[in-house]
Image 1: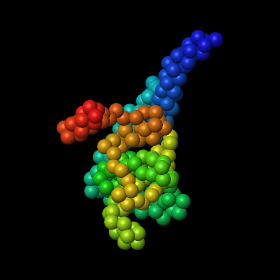
Image 2: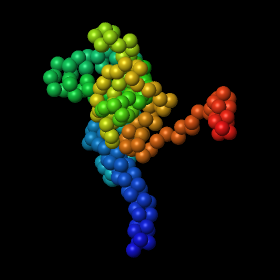
Image 3: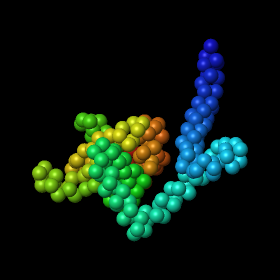
Length: 219
């Protein structure tokens, strides 16, 4: 029966990723198609063309997002967004959710000091166990004064497979190891639970190190 198991696994490895991919695409298309509800009834595809057109909402969502970006990028748009956010800040439950989601979105998709800047290795949740962490800030005056540490890092430790949740920790820079891995590769590694790892070639040994290795092998 081992041949049956082998063939079943081989077939599963073909159909499972394909099925999940199609399911995710269908979910996204259905989600974006809901943007068509923003149109007046007389301008919706089922009225104009007499039928639903799957995926048309993607085009509408793209135009809507692009138009919003153009609007908020200028001075007038930024003032309107400021007024809108000040209004939301007056609503107790809404302000907490909106602010948290916006900060996470800025950290993942934005640029500058509010984004994930570097990838570090830290011993967490205890000594001897290592995990990936994203730098969100450094050189914090009050934590450095209170702890007596010379260089404090703000680190976000994401959870698997949902990197939008996690833990915030502050550590001294000497307690963290900075990696050459970029943020995108690190996020893929976190989401996949370590299955998807970036292809990083080991650094070449220097001539002195190579000579030392040769002499050691000869000895």
